[in-house]
Image (cartoon, rainbow, N blue to C red; front, side, top):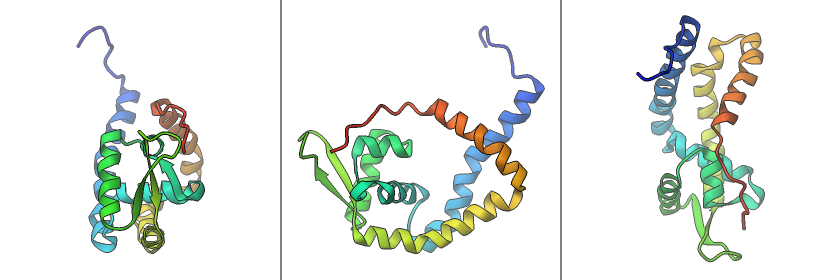
Length: 158
């Protein structure tokens, strides 16, 4: 396996559960959330990002960066949300080659209706298993890992 040293016992003890969480947590969240709300976890994340943006609008490339999705994936998600009336796609006035995603009032209402179910799933899947000290200790570590993965270029949203 090249010149890389194998993970030591402490690294492996961290890495293996992290891999399990990355695989199992989205499924655990979605298994009940999708039937209850009609939204996938990805849909929900996109709607949240738009709800937090000024005027509920983000350039598609900025939305991809915010959600951690590829440009092709975010385009498919926004197209699907648009077909369902939860978002709209609009051409960027300053750059005709770019598009913006806009949260519709129907999308905002769906997001607000889904919030209690999402919160319940997050609490049951994650926070009910952690102490306040666990959360305080893990929060900065996870933020540092997320920041290291964030390759989002600065956006010049329309």
